[in-house]
Image 1 (cartoon, rainbow, N blue to C red):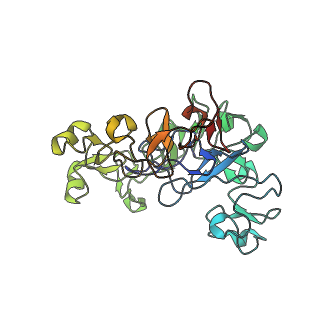
Image 2 (image 1 turned 90 degrees about the vertical axis):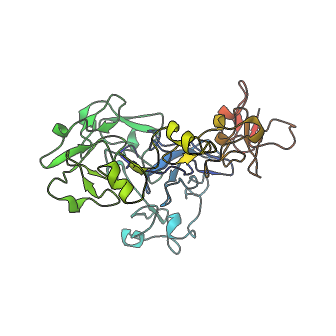
Image 3 (image 1 turned 30 degrees about the vertical axis):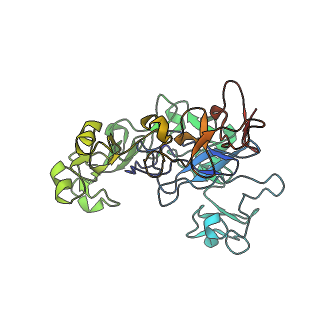
Length: 348
């Protein structure tokens, strides 16, 4: 998950939420513009308080939290949820049954679920940890790669011996990465433009045809990039500016306020708001899906002390006998020292 690709996603839903479930976010805070890389996984909290997994869909948003059932050991969604839910017609019998399954290419024969991993070595050093069939987090060191520890739900290296592959160096935050091309093998460069943390990749120098997935240009450093100049973006009608994440309409708020006072904030495009603080009290909430004031999708779209109701407006957070209210999604939604009951959505 920490080795995931950066994405240019100016207006995306950055949380996964369903009844009583809380998405706690990717370990690295995710790509800088709020999106996620399709296929990436992130920790989330289940109603029982146990750790679950949320995966990033093709649209660049995290899906629902997958939790293990205390009774059956199966992930929520059951064996009849289809390939996208990790199963096929009554459950997989071998890896061949999991080809193309969204949740992973390996068959857990004990549960009949298609999963991303069965053991820590099925996961890369860039995305270490195998818990509940998903790479990227852990509940104990046994779910991490050798010479790593489990801390705060994520595997961390303690030295270079805990790293390898495309991320051979243990960084200050206990995250495997590369810091320069000298860390990489022959014919490779350290790509810290397209990855949240540096990954060793094949140099595109002399082989620009190797650049795909929107990164169609080869930079002088041998790294595939989405554009090389502002003029290239303008000529393609994709914005005025070339940034490390691609063409953008703006790079600073000042460029937006001059164009339209109604959309004064830069979020790769000019938008009405980025956070609830950008909206007036008379029009509360900054909708994460549309970057507009006056509505919400998640509690985080609302001012401190309020949350998002079932009708997508910001109202008070639920406390006992509060009447109409918005369910809390985390204890940070609650006032003072009150804690959020994830099952009821009430602060107490």
